[in-house]
Length: 75
Image 1 (cartoon, rainbow, N blue to C red):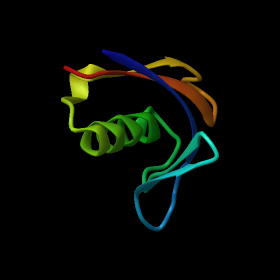
Image 2 (image 1 turned 90 degrees about the vertical axis):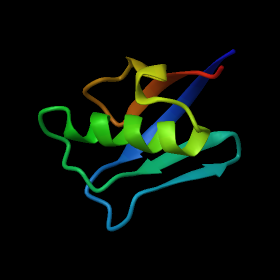
Image 3 (image 1 turned 180 degrees about the horizontal axis):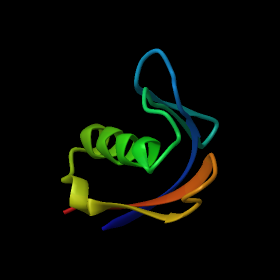
Image 4 (image 1 turned 135 degrees about the horizontal axis):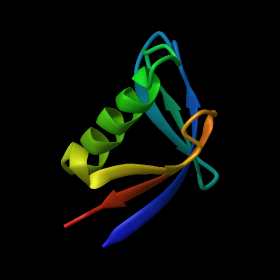
């Protein structure tokens, strides 16, 4: 099963968490938005939240902006 999520990322947050509200997901990550660090932190956070391996989480749109489309492969 593949889940497609629309996520808004907030880098440099004080704590890491996912907030699901009104069908949208907000991801707060500690990492800075440079050299892919925030994207990696987002993948780690989503993998942990959905109980999948990191390689099962892929950013398919929005690599360089806050609004991203993420695909999660659940087994």
